[in-house]
Amino acid sequence: MSRRIKKISVAVLFGGRSGEHEVSIVSARSVIASLDPKKYRIYPIGITKEGEWVLTSSVDAFIKRKGGEVCTLMPDPRLKGISTLRGNKRAIRIDVVFPVLHGTYGEDGALQGLLELTGIPYVGPGVLGSSTGMDKDIMKRLFMVAGLPVVQFISFTREEWQRTKKVIVKKINRLKYPVFVKPANLGSSVGITKIHSARQLSQALALAFSFDRKVVVERGIERARDIECAVLGNDMPRASLPGEIISSNEFYDYDAKYVDGQSQAVIPPKISQELIKKVQRMSLRAFQSLDLMGMARVDFLLQGRTLYINELNTIPGFTAISMYPKLWEASGVPYPALLDKLINFALSYHKKKNALRRTYTPKRAWYSA
Image (cartoon, rainbow, N blue to C red):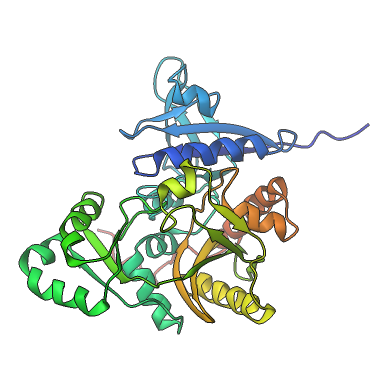
């Protein structure tokens, strides 16, 4: 007689208060469809653009607002679960959280801080890695400290722009056009503009500042190839085969990534074995320089034989056309097995972290009355 295997309860979080809300929905649909129902008891939790958490039967039910229970994660680590808030209230114990929340409040450390309070293991990097991996300015500075080559850039806040426009314009001119104007804290190419002259600057900045208080302007690398590499693991991560994105647009913007379906992925790219190994080494160094755990996709720009690290994504896309699962598929790790590994890495890291001491007993009770 076979023993019944206890299923792992997985809460898949998606949606969120972010410009990447729709991308997150599509990623979650793929993740939920690929989690093995024999191994996992799945709890889809959609977060609306207003921030309401809804325990739902499926991603499509969430989109159509059909049924669902308003719920919350309980920060008390003794409870380790979610609680419904209306009607027949109930508590549900969760073994691991799989966040598929891209962008603000999901990928920037905010959610990870909440999850730390709950005491529930979760997939992906912690608070520090998530926050530094989200801020393109801080991320690039840490890459530079780690000796990784980045494209020349400047960053500034809305207030700095309003106070010192002439100084900033001079700095941008020294980068030489074309340049990319980006919100510092966003992904999926939302709010990004490639501009070819100073006449386009004001409009590009207005768009970027509508998404974030801080903007990054970086020099455009002409005829650059977009190379991507996936990283998987905790303290001893491994890198996938890299891939190349051939964009359907002038650059790999939101439409080219998700809408028009015309961009192509070439895995592995047509580059030398030496360059492939260099991409993998630099990906691992980038991952470790931000103290990441679980997963990340590292994006590069290749001009001739010169390689620049562009940015890193701590919760990469998991849609059917996303590069992170495609890169691992080409490296011998199919999508369902990749999800298994990510959940196991989350559980393993949580176990090791819980073994650390959390209290200190002074020699005398100096603090008591």
